[in-house]
Image 1 (tube, helix red, strand yellow):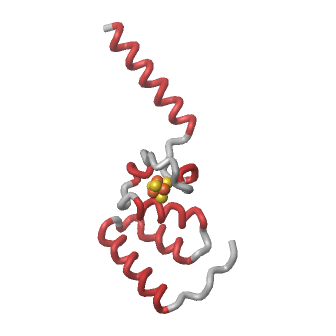
Image 2 (image 1 turned 135 degrees about the vertical axis):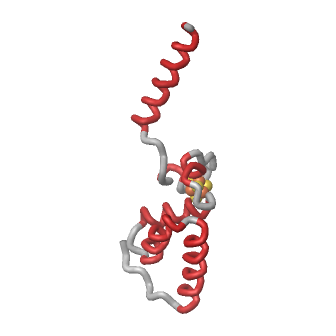
Image 3 (image 1 turned 180 degrees about the horizontal axis):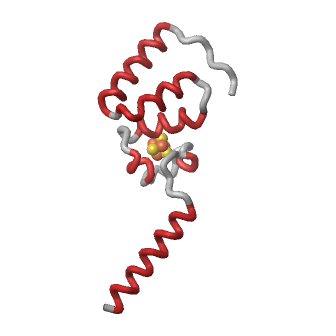
Length: 101
Ligand code: SF4
């Protein structure tokens, strides 16, 4: 990644406001935002954007249905394909067991 431009006083104020909000509502996510503001991690920037979009709720990001969003395919907290397949198989087996009862 390209080195980010130097932080202006306006940028610093805006980012401090965001960090205060994150610390208040989702303290465990503060470092994601800090790293994002450093401008060195595209992954942290995407994660921070999705957290901001979903009010810091990882479940909401996982279940995001905004298919038109440019970040949708790369959003964090997705269930990996193998996990999806396994959970679908588990559900199918559970349904079979219920029908046999
Ligand atoms: S992928 Fe979903 S959660 Fe992430 S920014 Fe887009 S709409 Fe928001």
